[in-house]
Amino acid sequence: MPALFVKKEDKVLDLSGKDRGKTGRVLRVMPAAQRVLVEGVAFVKRHTRPNPAKNIKGGIVERESSVHVSNLKVICSECGEPTRVGHSVLEDGKKVRVCKKCKGILDK
Ligand SMILES: [Zn+2]
Image (tube, rainbow, N blue to C red; front, side, top):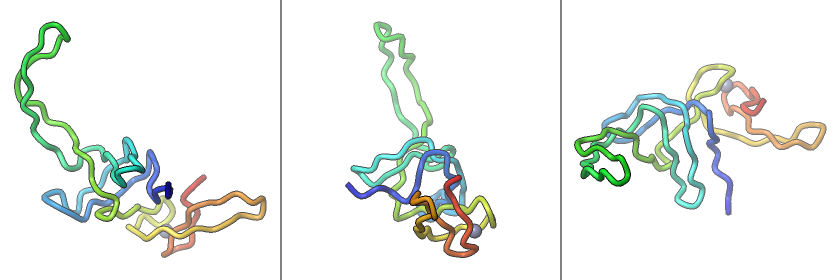
């Protein structure tokens, strides 16, 4: 399975939907679906039925829904710009992601 170019804790920019231009922190990646959950982005309202057995209160709950990775850009921690992600291999053989703009290393 190809690894995603976004990782947990990355800061990303959403390029799609009503949250276009919003940035947030990656909460969860779902490589199989090529989707990620981003904090504060793509909120949806879920109508929940109360279920006392599971201690769930009914009502409308707002929570993040997943965003397809093609709609995201990683924000570089070095230059602060939304960027495409490149790959590089360090001298010790470690593979890292790099910013295509400033060549900064995204994986510390
Ligand atoms: Zn950069």
